Amino acid sequence: MVLKLSEVGKDLHLSNRQLLRWVKQGKIYAIKLPSGRYRVPERELYRIKMGMEPLPTAMTEISIEETSGSKSSKQKKRKI
Image 1 (cartoon, rainbow, N blue to C red):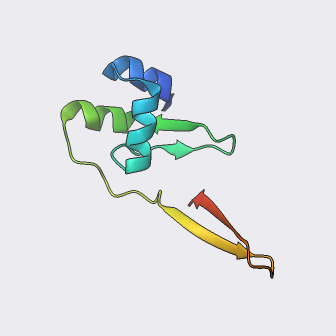
Image 2 (cartoon, rainbow, N blue to C red):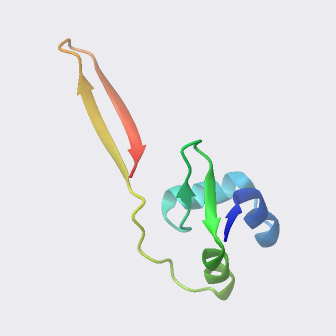
């Protein structure tokens, strides 16, 4: 089962903003949906409550630089 950030926040007494920071820092494993929203597996909430160390995750942020042939370049970030 997966939980919304708001559900996890209520259980841990944390704001959605703080949880989102932790997700981006890799402290909490979360699944990013195509809509851009995050879901946290129930086992991850259990891990946090038990005080266990974070598991390695596949969520890493990479930067991709695109050039259109001119001097300006656009930089995009995406999660994989």
